[in-house]
Image (cartoon, rainbow over all chains, first blue to last red; front, side):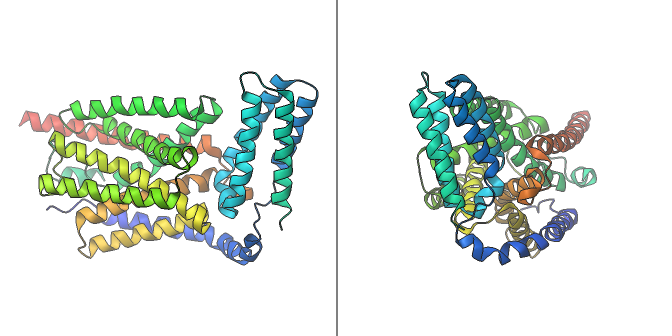
Length: 137
Length: 260
């Protein structure tokens, strides 16, 4: 069989890529290793920006504005989704717990006929979940 | 890389590209673009995962049909198909994991076994796994089935590394980069060409994802903070540039071949 055209440039590029990656990441990964003990206590890090949105959505629900709450919770969905690659590796199990809680709140507010009490309850649970996960360290 | 592909025999009957540096750059970047693109439609555009999934599967069917119908290697059709396979392969794993609650250990094992099965059938039927001689319908179908399986496997294995080992994108870039570098070394040490190609093909999936995350994630999380949108645009521009070059070369090769 003919050999593939995987020639020197590829090797060079791969090594360059790894070297670049190593140069950029090495200091950070040393930090990650030294904080590994803290991570075993399960630590997603700072979740206050997400908690703040949840609190805000809950207050909008309290005002009886379920349409406005549905609109506002999208900010939580987007920012949570965008941060997944950064947060999840820190504590995957905790991440899933919070993720499911957010899903329940999204489902409640996006129901065809959203119920204020159910929505409020899902948000209270979500805030409680975030606090529990944050309080572990 | 132009010189590399023109030096080679103008085997424009082969319906898949020569494996050049450009090939791997497009392959790695198409992973990121595919994923962020699907994510954008599902979350930002609010289409939801189900609608996005069906739309992508339909688009893949169209692109694959065009790829199978074309008589020779047409770069833009080929790479469009790869991007869509990347999206759908990722979505298959996501549906299994998030939707059906299948464990990542199980899906990784099943996809690995599935890929081995495809290769076994391919070899049994064709007596070769060469990617240099994809010129029959059957070989092409084997090729694309294997590609789809590598993307699903790469997604599941990458997610498993994140979940079980807490492997973030920073270490991920290094780990998968080193594994690919080892594969390249093995290739130069006369390891089996086809085997090293497919191993690299699987590993570039999680590498592409980690690389995309490294650029897009916020600085708080150790990324460069470019955001998903900008990262995708940069990658897309590079992909379009490289595919345009490949398309021009392919057109020239076709013209020379017919002129002869």
